Amino acid sequence: MKKFILCLITLSNSLFSQTLSYSFSDEFETLKKYEELSFFKFNETSYASFYSRDGKDLAIQLFDPTFKSVTTQSIITLPEECKNSFVSRILKIKNEFYLIYYSWDRKTKNSKMFAYPFDKASLSFKGPAKKMIDTDQTDDESYYKYDYSNDSTKSMTTFRCRRKERKDKVNKDVISFNLFDSKMDLIYAHDIEMPYTEYDMENLDYEIDSHGNIFVLISVKINNAVDGIVNTDKENEDGVRFELLKVNQTTHTLESTKLYLDNKYISTPVLSEDLNHNLVIAGFYSDQKKTKSFNGAFVFKVSYEADGTIKNILKSYSDFPKEVIEAEASAREKRKMEKKEAKGELEVNNLKFNKILFKKDGSALIIGEEEYVTEYSYSMNGKNYTSRTYHYDDIFLLKIDPQGKTVWCTKIDKGQSGDKKSFLSYYNYSLNDNDYFIFRDSFIEQELVDQLPDKKLRNKGLYLANVKIDAGGKIAKSLLHIEEDEDDIRPRQFESVTDNLIVYHVRSDRKNTRILRLQAK
Image (cartoon, rainbow, N blue to C red; front, side, top):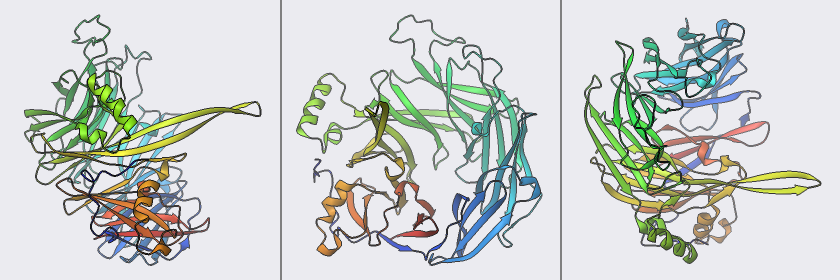
């Protein structure tokens, strides 16, 4: 069993003085056959939950700030042109709401996407719908990808056009870029061919900045067919570099900047715009090839002019400290780590990059979680079965300064497992320069619950671990004690509707639903 090490984790002096308060709404009838879309702050005095049903109609429920009960419920028939279409999402951009929906004609292979403005005052659609995309170059909606600028003034929809060649070594992807302003009016649209074949490259991420520049991050094999270095060494034949592609919206071409990885092996990088309008490429890296373990986090910060002309690229690699990796480990685990360290292979296993949070002072917090699956195969009554257990363990946090240097690194020790992902992992929110993590973890819960002053409360209701990380990396743990017997609460599905307000739909039974309202102090 894991034990807390006080040099790394400091329990809050007021262990059970919650930083979160909670309340439940009254029960209301569950909307049958409706799919929940999104929860939003609707206006200054109400909050809204949107639902859709089979391309027929839209439902909206309004709550006042107390979330005591549903103040307004309205079923809104979709306009004729929306019917029998696929509702994709409700988009809120600059306090305006749009229904995003698309159609697909199997015979003509034509797909259209529209944005229908929604009037908050009358709870109805106000036409006409704005056509976003009209194409016969895609096969399925799953190709659509949505991105939004940090300042919420622009959105972009991209999709991969129907491939021209069947073989990856021959085919070059054609990507359709469609850029819109906050009124969902078209700014730019064009289909652009990628510079390398599918075999030689991989699209990693897309980003639009606040100026309307479009960027694509790709990985390219060093031994590619365009400008590759012929290398027969099997150790290096799969080596890659990054390229940052900028869409020239005048010539409809791609302008490339090559980024070499300094003999590091990198997995699942993300491309983002920070608060100072720099492009940031971030992820985890390893010194070993083809591994699920990582030495630390990397950040490439790209500064550029408003037109996208690159001025400077700052690279940084930050190792996870040995004492953080080994913290909370058993004696047996530490012996294994010592052997790996002797070989130069001490890394964090099964670490998945979750997100990077940008701070006002130019620093950033990189967050990852240990995640893996174990399988067990067995036979019963002459049939073979396989069961899967999902594991979500420690959360690693690394803070870097504006120059990419490590400020601090720590981890939240937890161990979650189960046959359903939805109850596992965590929910993260930020408030007043602090970051918080809410999750269900029987070990942490029991460690803290055992210290409850009132023994009568120990086995009543549900406890959620609420972990606070302050700007200096200090950890404090508290419990959120939900006294009701409500077990169907899944923190990873929580939604933030304001900086300090979190909501979640709780199914009381098959017929009724309640809203769990969490207020951060």
